[in-house]
Amino acid sequence: MSLETEIMTRMKDAMKAKDEDTLRGLRAIKAEIIKAKTEPGANGAVSEEGELKLLQRLVKQRKDSLEIFEKQNREDLAQKERAEINVIEQFLPKQLNEDEVRTALQQIITETGAASPADMGKVMGAATKQLSGKADGKLIASIVKELLSK
Image 1 (tube, rainbow, N blue to C red):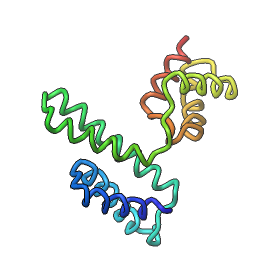
Image 2: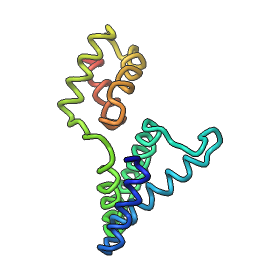
Image 3: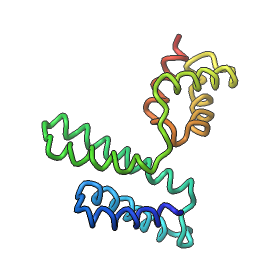
């Protein structure tokens, strides 16, 4: 089942259940899918990789907003962002925890032969390909910096 079909099915269920938080998150995903399908060169379709990137971008946007709302003590808005993040993350692959990311990055550093912070670009390129969709880019970058500066 395509992501768009699954979203539509879940939207119907959320409407019947009158679950506003879930519905808001699903509508955001649907809007992004429609926008992606109508972009020049998309030919009315979005690849699985494109869907994954789209979902990751939505989660990142909401996490950035959440951080701002928490700093401004706007718990009402922060709660909405958390709810949308939870809905969107249901469609993403299982995220790796920090220890799993660290282990994968140590292996990548060994494979690439990186030895200093100057090699960060080489490691990040390989890590981004290997861990795409499974870990947050900020987390990957911070762990790579830490490992290469030892």
